[in-house]
Amino acid sequence: MKKVVTRLIFAISFMFTSMVNANVILSLDPTTQASHQGDTVSVTLMIDGLGDFNPLSLSFFDINIEFDTSALSFAGYNLFNDLGDVGFFEALDFSFGNLGGGLVNISEQSLFSNFDLWNFQPGSFALAELFFVVDAPVISTLSIDRAELVDVNGDTINIIEANSASVTAVPTPATSVLMCIALLTMFVRKKYNPLGINKP
Image 1 (cartoon, one colour):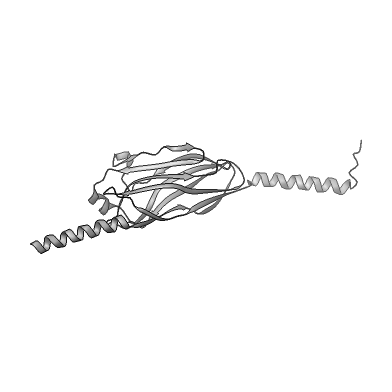
Image 2: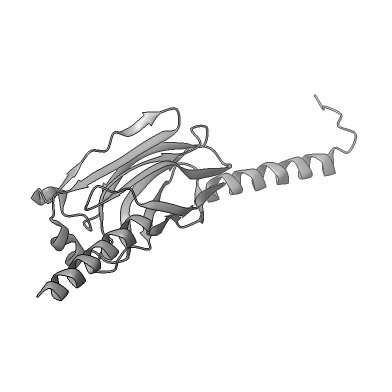
């Protein structure tokens, strides 16, 4: 009996040590995308490297996403259900949304127990989807500015990597057509009036 208890204590301590020292990756998906000015684009915040239906599980996150306000406008967000469904009070949405100054805050707290999360949560999943309106025809970057991840025991989860994403705004088809018409008009006028003399 004493040996069983000793082994159990060792297994639990090893499990918790592994959880504390675990490293995960945060990413924004897709890393690159093209859109037209005025369109709404979405970027998904992903996490990878959790326990995959075993400890380690994510219980809380608080993440800031930085974006270029001269090129994009924040249009909203959507939380996914791998910490629990907010609509069914399985998790709490603590997100502030647009913080101003080109920062968006996304935060969620699971209300599931340790064992519920361990049995329910995969090793890789989407935390949230963020929506932006493309305001200017330029290449803009989104990046993870700050992130806090906490496991079911209240311990901080280490982040070993966090990527950035870019949105390239291309001219709309209508704009391209107008530009072609303008260039054609200039060419025709120059061809039939090579000296640029204004006729009465």
